[in-house]
Image 1 (cartoon, helix red, strand yellow):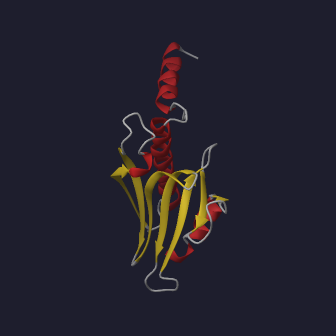
Image 2 (cartoon, helix red, strand yellow; image 1 turned 135 degrees about the vertical axis):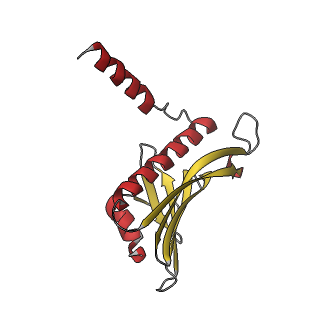
Length: 162
């Protein structure tokens, strides 16, 4: 390997490196934002060339769940990615809600809106898995009743978008 190749390999490694969450609010926020970015990239890849519109946006989240946890003891505000899939009148929105809820970290709402079929709206909740990836559960399920979000589970969840 040439010096140039080693140099660019080192640059790439540093660009891809993100400090692991240290259990602090700031570390958890960083992990949450990174996971949403990764999920957005994955969803874009899954739908590339499908004809379904994928809109990635950023919101500024005022997170009340962090009150008392951070150094300033107030709510944290941070920018985080959202995802919207559109197929005619049908849509799926994946929107971060807050960092902490019911013992879960990285809480996100996935809503399937299908006004032309039953049920017209389905809601699911995502939360970060400690080792990477996501958990998913249906709206009426307890937070302990969650499954790992895989590609198959994702497409089964949004089946009414088709």
